[in-house]
Length: 260
Ligand SMILES: Cc1cc2nc3c(=O)[nH]c(=O)nc-3n(C[C@H](O)[C@H](O)[C@H](O)COP(=O)(O)O)c2cc1C
Image (cartoon, rainbow, N blue to C red; front, side):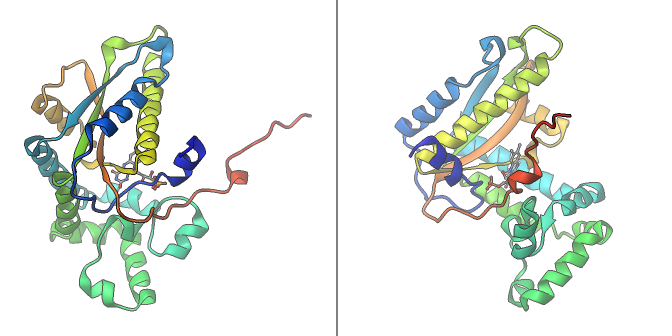
């Protein structure tokens, strides 16, 4: 697979994975791709924690579940979420940005079986009113998606926790920004290498949202204080077709200089 194919094939994989550990040869190739990431002054500020055992996965699964249940009770979070959430596929494709609600949450049976138009209207009304969602959150509506995603974390063939070593900071005022940029590049190298090996990747951000949770993760995995927890990735072999995604048109984000 060449680099353009890998870029176009890559998707955030939110479904199940094949029940098979990641081969060491494949893992080493992914690590090698990460190793060759560019960084300012070649400081290479990243550290990767490879999590294969159930003990570590369990800790992160429990934290994921708790964080999502909490998010469902947080009206600001829900309101911000709803701005980037489409309730039907056509609307999502027309927008060309954001995510599709049903890619993130499995709807209760009652809604799955209802006519699409009705479900769409109901969900849209629900999303428009973050307050009503918070009430639902307090009544336990977050438990199902939280449990679903936590189970995926627990059953993931492999998790990679990426941290940034602040001691490896480059000179200059912009040090932090440059380090963050290179961590982004490292993640993209991992995503593309994984795609080319038939391995899916999903970001699992929920347990990393709050500083308290990030601190707890550091303590749990003995990550030194000077290392900032950046990202958690869930990886596994896929046996499904690549998922759908959308993007803005080029004309919406590419600008050419205007000579006056
Ligand atoms: C920093 C970052 C955090 C993300 N967090 C999550 C996440 O917690 N859960 C998830 O399913 N996808 C997550 N995503 C994936 C985005 O939702 C996804 O890239 C976007 O919707 C486009 O879809 P695609 O990657 O399939 O093209 C994250 C992506 C980035 C770059």
